Image (tube, rainbow, N blue to C red):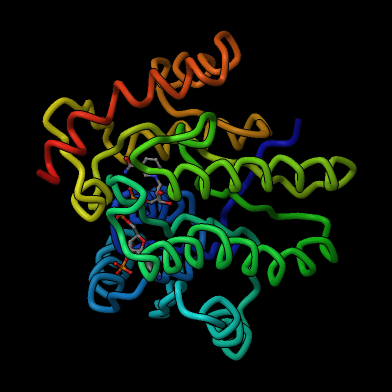
Length: 268
Ligand SMILES: NC(=O)c1ccc[n+]([C@@H]2O[C@H](COP(=O)([O-])OP(=O)(O)OC[C@H]3O[C@@H](n4cnc5c(N)ncnc54)[C@H](OP(=O)(O)O)[C@@H]3O)[C@@H](O)[C@H]2O)c1
């Protein structure tokens, strides 16, 4: 299989200001890729760009602030990229957020923003970027799903369902592109060091958080191997297999036992 070479390619990374997205930016920069970094907080993107440009003199970095939970957020971002005349050879659909809570404990407005970001923006950016990849018969997409993608997630109901969508969508798209050189992969991280858990209002006292650098390293190994999905971490991989071994109801009960006390305890 031909080894991937990211040198001089242009890679669009959403959610690049923090955590896993920031780490994707660092690791792709060290492979000589030009980057388009986006998130809402422009100051964080500019600080990252400045740091990466000082470390790697041979790459170009553009920063574009965008709120991808807004209607047309993805389209407006893509128009700005087109206006700059930049190609998107690879797309890393990474931006996303979740909430640890009972379903009724969060406003519909929050769920709406979550679905717009975790699903709509990801699908729309894919829809906008894929035609040029098809024309060139090269490039590809990594969609950041989660180990939440493999089973329903009581106490993160909407988040879990959004990540199940990301895995299903990515794998289906891989099927349509099997005869091309375009690679689509879903990355399924387990709990990872980033701002995610704090923003999700999660109790992390009993969680093992993997460094984002390890998650991205395993993503790039999986992508190189042309995997349809990659679960980062051996334990996470084993956990992702549980729903194949027990009934769906048992799976749900296992997840309830994992989260009920910490989520309801935190609310109380
Ligand atoms: N951390 C984990 O345990 C974990 C586990 C499995 C999967 N994941 C997934 O990994 C991905 C990255 O999360 P992370 O862990 O790196 O969390 P993070 O540190 O919170 O990063 C999230 C990124 O998304 C951006 N973002 C948030 N809302 C946005 C919006 N409305 N429009 C545009 N950008 C937005 C954030 O920047 P701004 O706030 O500046 O916009 C930030 O750059 C997410 O899809 C998440 O679901 C995380």
